[in-house]
Amino acid sequence: KNEVEQSPQNLTAQEGEFITINCSYSVGISALHWLQQHPGGGIVSLFMLSSGKKKHGRLIATINIQEKHSSLHITASHPRDSAVYICAVQGSNYQLIWGAGTKLIIKP
Amino acid sequence: EAGVTQSPTHLIKTRGQQVTLRCSPISGHTSVYWYQQALGLGLQFLLWYDEGEERNRGNFPPRFSGRQFPNYSSELNVNALELEDSALYLCASSSDGRQETQYFGPGTRLLVL
Image 1 (cartoon, each protein chain N blue to C red):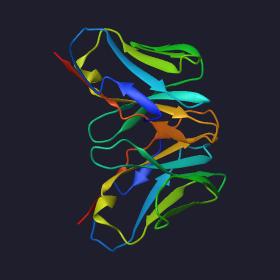
Image 2: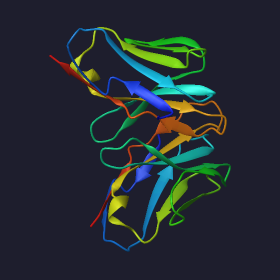
Image 3: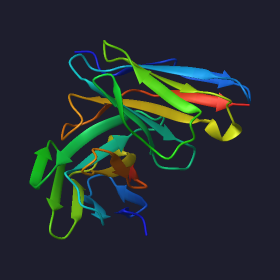
Image 4: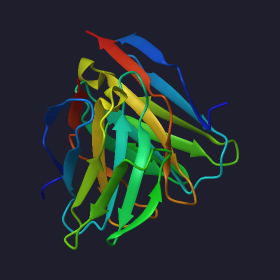
């Protein structure tokens, strides 16, 4: 079993739909990161969470430490949101453990 | 403020050769991380440098090595290249190694023929 599991692996939705990507982990963490990887490899850090909820524009990230679960939500999705979204957890040794990523395609 | 920069952007090498990849962190950041993303795979942690010292390394053979300079820039060296070393190599920086967000560079695409 992987230490960080993401679901779904692939997601195709229509423009405007509400998107949820889930991340579950099995190790103790000091923080959880959500990252966005565009085609070609460019990676943008979206959020770093250690508790609660963060919002940035149309993106919302939540984390439940007790349940070892985090979600990334996209409201009013747009084709430019199409990317791979990666959940990564940061352990006590500061190393990031990556999920396999969720490939999101938003159709116009 | 300039982001993390990496050079070169693309590189083609042959088996057995050696390669050096370079990374400049965001100004003020002291930690540099190196990751490998092979085709179809997630990011694999390679190395973490902080304040000029190697703090941690991932499960990679010794032919993967690196260093961090006094200005906090970093190099990743790969000796005796193998075909499976073909990948995107990403560098990230953070202001320290603890709970700071990592900011990623654009990556270097390495193709080993």
